[in-house]
Length: 281
Image 1 (cartoon, helix red, strand yellow):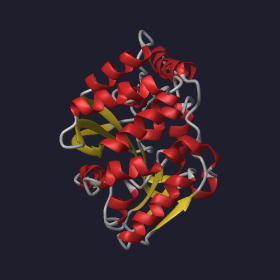
Image 2 (cartoon, rainbow, N blue to C red):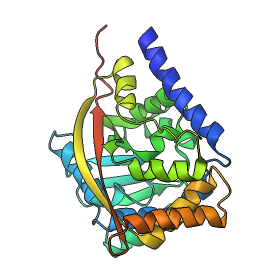
Image 3 (spheres, rainbow, N blue to C red):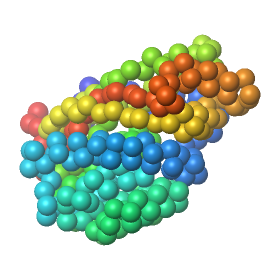
């Protein structure tokens, strides 16, 4: 491994370690169960436009099509499961959180989607050997930053991919609200930095892959009550959510609210690669 590649991995590990050190509690499976309804609303309000945009970006380059079998690592409430399942042959969701699984089952039933299955395990416990080469596309998104051993987990994705692998990560957008709220509550404690794009792109490239990338624009619309719950759960990872903390969250949201709804615009990077192809040198 080159010095540049090693430095990239160390940067990833440092960001992971800093997040864990700053947290009073960890991002457990129970945490994601508590976030299930929030994440579901997050994706349902725009009729899964985000997941559809990711699918369309990949389909435009021949990465996925009607006959494809797709596996998603860390599926959450069905961000990709539902829009992809409408357009591919079969979708497999790897998701351990019971709350997220219930949401996937409810929302797929409402949309008459049946061409999917769920592996109810954390990704690290999935037997990749039994799935070797089974999927045309293996995709992941939010969960990727929770892997300290990022290169090992990428390798596990590649093991079961008969076609391509894909990582979808945030690539910018307004963080002003979040940072201002953070400092009003947490003072001088540094705002959490989550590993994303372009860090993951660089790790792939520096370790011999040939990643391709396309940017997509996305928008979220969330209710005041749901966002209050989101921020309560989020800040409980870092501090005691006392009444004065709740009041700071409430005041900040009310100042930004438009008729009780909150809109955010952001960009995401759709990064894909063929595990069989490697750079020379």
